[in-house]
Length: 314
Length: 226
Image (cartoon, rainbow over all chains, first blue to last red; front, side, top):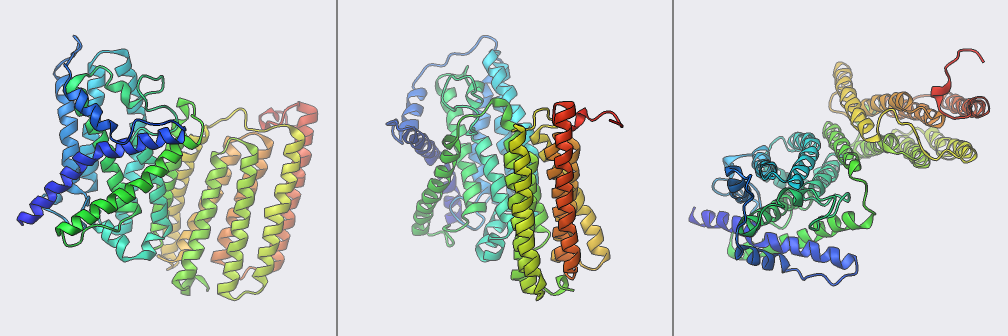
């Protein structure tokens, strides 16, 4: 029992500690694709360190929402790893708090607070960022729900652990059209939710920014918390995508120390694969107009529906 | 009946082929450029040709190999070639005035698929075929028909309409192959010639539109008599 509690803490710490590393690796890869030197994979840690030592400047129009949003977002991202198979393929204490839908709810709560804070700060950029993020969210949510329905029909359960076990045990389910379409649909959602759609640039201060625009008014430690929360969200979505859907292997089955180290190494390998795929999608084609974002999500919706059709056979 | 006793491998191959052709129908629905539209149609026809060869192999219908060759040649090469010739002559590269945006069309198409699934469930259940590949085949057939109608409804470039009609026909053919594989070869050949006539007629219609109306949009056809 004690060991399981330690393992659960390890899961949360893994997400907390390695999230900036994942962000750094992705940014470094993007720079390398563009034949630039890149800041190195540890730059996000240095950024966070710098921001935590800076002063906080608050807009005059800001209310209490501005203050609590970073904390709510950060806490939400610390809560979700409880529900997921990050390191072990068996449920740990408190992992029965919620199923996939519950995890989705907490993830969305974090983004919801950031949207409110973006509006609350009173700046024009915050408003633009919030309205764009909500527009994408409105289109992404139904697809997410349909993906969850597809997973439920496939595994007859809504728990990520059950899905993981099913896919490991039955290669025929893994290679079934239903599962492949679910992977395709979720990949689009992953790209949208981590703000890497090839319709805008994720770098700071650009005309097509979405996520960055919402937190433009933040500074100092609050900004650091928000940035860390968004990196953790990315890490969590990568975990769901690779440990539950795409590569369900390589998780610790007994929960011993060696197995945990092994599963962290496996996680690194899996994330590397997913990150390369994401970087490829983001950089391989030229940037699209902003108003073509819905085509991507429509395709994702179609894939999810086709996955449901596919589950009707097995 | 073939579908009642299929081994799992065969039914998974069938379902993969059927769903792949449905995906290609969606590619057609979502594309803006007429050329992509045409390539997707050709690929879909090849997929169906492979499907008929597989059905022939597992159901031991030797004449299906001939059907597969005819399908690949006619639907996969000859008809796309004819349409491609019309496109090349016209200088119309893309659908210009869209009634429905491609992304909205995709979502409407997805709802068509859901509707088709519900209908297929009812039909499959009443025939005692629930849980077999028949439900999937019915779903794919119905949804390809609905998508074909959708293309006819939301696109008014004359060429898109030919392709919409051809998708509709592809859907019926795909369903028929899995559901009633005993269909005589003769009927298949008759249908192929029908398609040829459809494309030829549309070719004449397009020429008429260009000469008399000056555009290839079917919205310009407003008068009943010339």
